[in-house]
Length: 122
Image 1 (tube, rainbow, N blue to C red):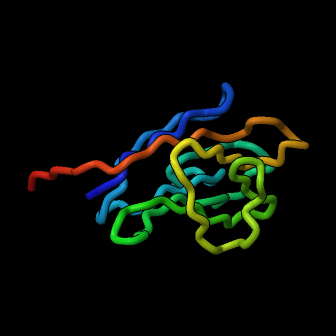
Image 2 (image 1 turned 120 degrees about the vertical axis):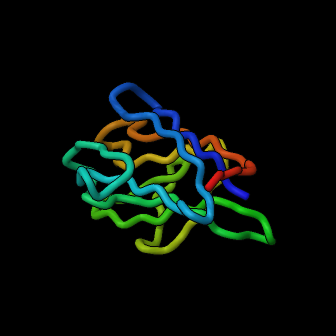
């Protein structure tokens, strides 16, 4: 089992992103440090390793969580993720912002994801 994740930018200038998350590839890291993250966002308010999306198990089902590692914060549906370094469950349709809306509105993505079956040939 796997989750197909798609990040749709809330506005221009932010990269879109798609990936299948599975047992072999369980997370996506967002930050400003090229070569160390999956999605590079060059902005002075974005930390080198800002946040991470990761697979979690909830009641024998795959789900998605976000973990904030930033200095300035991460927001889900307008609410700041309260605990740095803790996983916070997110759902398809949620809006994730990596910059406070008082600095810039809509600096983030709408999440679209769902369970899928991955077939890998070796």
